[in-house]
Every structure is written in structure tokens, then in C-alpha cells.
Amino acid sequence: MKYFAAITLHLQASSVIVFNGLNFSEWCEQVKFHLGVLELYLALLEDKPTAITDISNEQEKLYHKQWERSNRLSLMFMRMTIANKIKTTISQTENAKEYLNFVKERFRSIDKSLAGTVMAQLTTIKYNRLKSMHEHIIEMSDIAARLKTLGIAVDDSFLVQFILNSLPPEYGPFQTNYNTIKDK
Image (cartoon, rainbow, N blue to C red; front, side, top):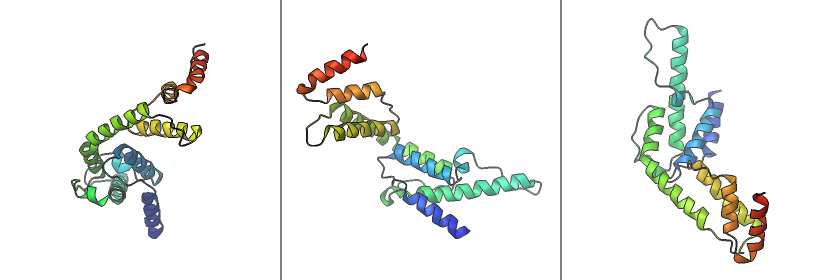
């Protein structure tokens, strides 16, 4: 049974994007999801329980054991999904919640900077006919989805407007027709 758990943990970790210092929001979302699926999220939700004493009851002992397991495996999971060059810059703690918070604080400004770059990409991209219109729209939708993982939600009506604005002048009649229909 222990081998199965180890294999499952490794398989889940290998499907998470590697944190490279520039993708905290996306990495964190995936880590939390996978730890939730593995039912290892307890240590990320709750602070470390008080130490077990002679007067601790069975329920307290069981909770402490579950939290310790969650904490240990969550730390391993997160460390397995961080690029080696980043691992050395992260404070070594034995508490999964503290570890995740430290990573968040350390790389928050980089994430915000990335959000600005991605927003600029969405607002300045132009359709250049090197790919199909469908591929262009999908690319812009992907950029908007990436912004969402960085904490910036792009309303669908704004996305449509960005897409229309990215089209060359010969699509002017289409833009006008769309705006006329939209305003009714």
C-alpha cells in the first residue's frame, strides 16, 4: 500500500508544471488541486496542532498523525515541483504552510510584473494572417486565461473587444456590425 501511495504522489507531482520563479499563481493552483485530490491538503489549511501529551485522547492523536503525514508529503510534493535553481533560494522549513507562504512572498512581485506583461500582450496583439482566425482567437483566449491564473479576470465582453481591436482595417464592417448588434 505504501508503494502505491508513493507512486501516486510521484505521478501527481509529475503532472504539475515546474515552478520556475515566474509562474507562481499557476503552479500554486495546480499544487493545491493535486494535494486536494490526494487528500493531503490538511497541513496547508490548518496550523500545526499542539504536541501530543499523556492526556491526549485518541482523536487528538489521530488528527496529529494525519496532520504530520499531510505536512511531510505536502512539503515533498512542493519541493518535487520546483526547479532546482529556485530551491536553493527558498527558506528551508519543515512546515508546508510556511513553505508555501514563503514562496508566495518571495515571488509575488515577479508574478505581478508578469501579469503586466501578459496584459500588454493581450491589448497589443494583432491578427497577422500567419495563422487562421480561429487560432488567433484561441491564442487571445489563452492569454486571457493566463491572466486569470495571475489574479486578473478579463470579462468576456472585454475579450471580444480586444479580439475585434486586434483585427486589420478590412474587418471594420464586421466590427461595426458586431457593435450594432451588441448595443441592441
